[in-house]
Length: 594
Image (cartoon, rainbow, N blue to C red; front, side, top):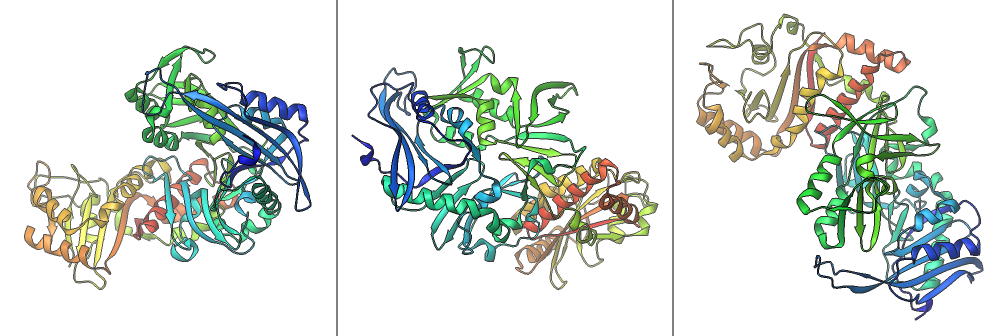
């Protein structure tokens, strides 16, 4: 067996050379990654010089056996032999790492490499305007009501999807088709893969040399790619002075999915201490509980990561470290959890840092840190004017002093509920009160005779006048959570009518059907509206504590850099609301005081 037998896919991690890799250093890397071998090394090459098409490269290679229990067994004592390998190709512009089932490589190589910047990876093979076929996104938000990760796929996404509202999304993986083939790039892990047949060494070297040249010009191409429609990658040094991290959300969904698909390949162990090598192996139920607990939103105060318990007590569970070009995290809990996969073991905190499995938000909401990179929503401040266009001011809201003003027989005129019935929904619309219980909205209306037909979900909130983000969180969260219910079929609305709307409101004599006739007529109105392909769907927030004039002054101060801290959070919340509505094809509308 020799290196000439190697035949593998064109998929590698790419790094920028930092310093020359000596023969001794390369030999040390080989010793480290093969330390757990179960037999003799099959083949070893240490920085062997190779010339391909006139370009000189250096190749380091090792292949060796490892033993592990078969994935479909647990505690059997049986072992199967697999073969691991590491191939380093040092080209003039880049170092490429091909590997399988090796441990410790990144720690050993870290002194000799630097990461390629996000925009360099994002612009690779993009000079010929490639078609983006698939993109995986994560939201620049830790809010519980936001869809945190999603994937989009089409022959050409730039022509198939609306980009309105996507500026709050971070691309963490994408596949693009161009004149030089189809490549998948994952900037967080520095991995580039080409859709191709398996290749031997010389063909792999040619691809690495070409990819290295592409990486050198990637940043020039990046602004002209489809990726530029999303959050923009910026250096960590661009964070404005005084900007503080405010929250962190760990995301182990990829790890969870891999474990659920092949549980026998993984072992989770809680060590007796962060430095201990012995501990308790977790059962499946305990692993689920661990990942669920780790994926909660945690607050950041200074460099401390804190968890606030149900009893409102704060517990420090870790720390963040602001490095020159990156942010790393340490957590006592994650340090005590060791994951073993295919004979490779590492602490969960190390896994999180290596894979960038966390999102950090900041006091300036246009910034977010994910997948080892700082991102900036360049459109956030610029979106203020368009955001303000969803607002409608109504002076009658100033007379509202309560939210519901419930009496035994009616909603009082001083309440925001009566305001909705008199001032928000047209007289000819069918209107039901859906407040309490299985609540989709406070009110739902259907206009079957309008052109086009209209379906409205209306969410109300009475509060004292304020531009506070806190007061907005509940109605916006409720509205986003229920967006998908606007696309329920006629059967769901009919069931709602039978089980809830045909009855009285709570312990009163107030009918839930406020307008629209009998339950049968209500069912028909909603059936007509939801089955009509041209129906316009809208979400209406009615907020008595918000003023258009006050909000305009606050946002003007934000643009001038003199706003109070909570104003940027309010802008972020409104942007999240509008983006979520547009992604669902729903029109956002907000009614407040002048």
